Image 1 (tube, rainbow, N blue to C red):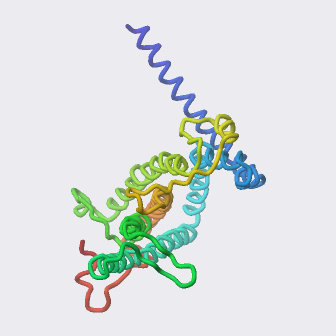
Image 2 (cartoon, one colour):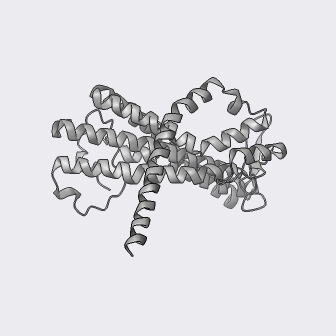
Image 3 (cartoon, helix red, strand yellow):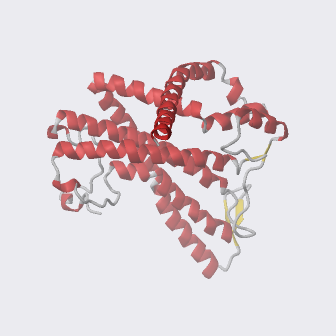
Amino acid sequence: MQEESSVTLGQILGALGDGVVWVFQNIAMAFYNFGYAVSHPQLWLDWTNKESVMRFVYYGGSVEFFFVVFVAVLIVTAIGMWRNSFMWGCVRVLEGFANTVGRFFAWAGLLMVLQQIIIVFMQRIFTRPDIVFGFGVPLQFDISWYAEELKFYNALVVTLCATYTFVQGGHVRVDLVYAGVKFRTKKVIDMFGALFFMIPAATLIWLYGWFFMWRHLIVPKPSASDTLERLLMKSRAMRWNVETIGFSPNGFTAYFLFKILLVTFCGMVFLQAIAFFYRSYLEWKEGEESENKYLDKDTLGEGEEAYEGTH
């Protein structure tokens, strides 16, 4: 029994050692991979070459890309901890990006309502089977196309306004202990949540969403388990096959956009997780006087403060 236990323990320690070595090797290779990608953009950005497309597909969900991003975040974080003003600048830029994108695409909600009103009028009052927009060369689709397009507007609001809503504090939260703990403890909880929930979730969804998106854009369909060599072999038969099939014969024909939005959503959540970690760290370090520092939060106007922050 003791020999079996010692062998098992040795195997565990050996596997852990191999894992640590693997991580540091990939961290070291991240600098080379980034430099090589920047100095040879034609290998993955020249989409007139089918092999370049397959390289782009592979590296977008690869270990190499993960460690390039990982090292970049480590470097920025290290500089920010040395120069807190730099980290505050990162927070303002990332939160400003989330706010700008969210405030713009929030108008898709209004567009969705107006289009639904037009659909009802055209169907019930004018009894038209289609809707035509434009002059000269008109944009003409069946009413069912416009009805299904409403899902796309809803997807725009959900995916591109999620981080904006997070910055504004508009997401519903279930609070078990948060409200009753001290200020600095709250910031530790926030940092923990950003590191161990937001970032891993965004990364995992990206890895699956990336190949899910490309499987609806090209054939032969790429897989997350494909090696670079296998994808380069597939590139010989590669052709664009953008998904245009709707749920109904005359329905919305751009469902591939939903897959693109999924990947965009993951990227934005990842960036917001970094910003949230930075803000929580800085507020933990500087104390309560720095709470909501530089926060660009929407307001309902003077006299409406009592209704702000309610969900």
